[in-house]
Image (cartoon, rainbow, N blue to C red; front, side, top):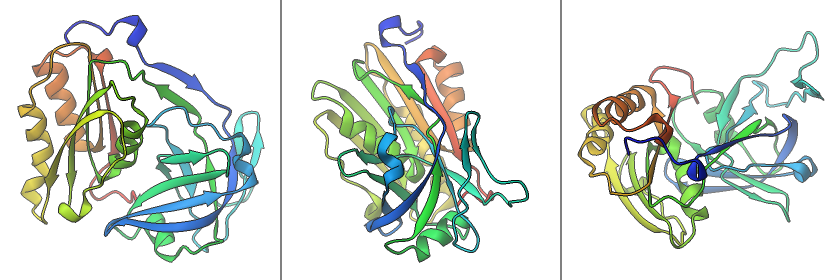
Length: 265
């Protein structure tokens, strides 16, 4: 793990044309008490591409509920001059079904920001503008093992990855959620071991994710580590893996999804 990743296993960056799409809500499904899946559909999804489990796209949440559709240009979507750009948040494309042009996006229900407010009032037929993904970080499934780390905000990416892995793949997951009711079941052919950690309303338990990573025994062989979640936790985990464990940075991808006190939702 201290040596750089071999070329045949190295992730590949793929770029996509950046395009805004106007979509309609087809269905809303409660996955857990704090996680909702919204299924979108629309003709604009005809050329939609999402090549990686940790892709992200921007969702635009207009304060009055009326979507403002930007113009797609060679440089990307552009809002009309004088138009107030609506608040936008990044989300993971959870599923895309090309045959029916349906796109699933999972939302964590917390806070009172633009995303949470929109989801709370969303009904079938509502419209929303989404843009992207502009690119994908494509990872091969052919590692000897993979470790995935995160909180609720990372579960859409983690779930998608697990469900896309083949039977020969081996994956370990360390996930922090509020309580047992927030645990999710993923349909996967891969050999998966999930460790669920629970906050149970305790602020002290927030450190549990970092502690669990520190005590995880890294398996032998060609491995890759992916993580996403609260910024301070991800920084601590990244520092531990890269500096204390000496893992080569080509084998680690850690993303800061949110910060406490920031209007992420």
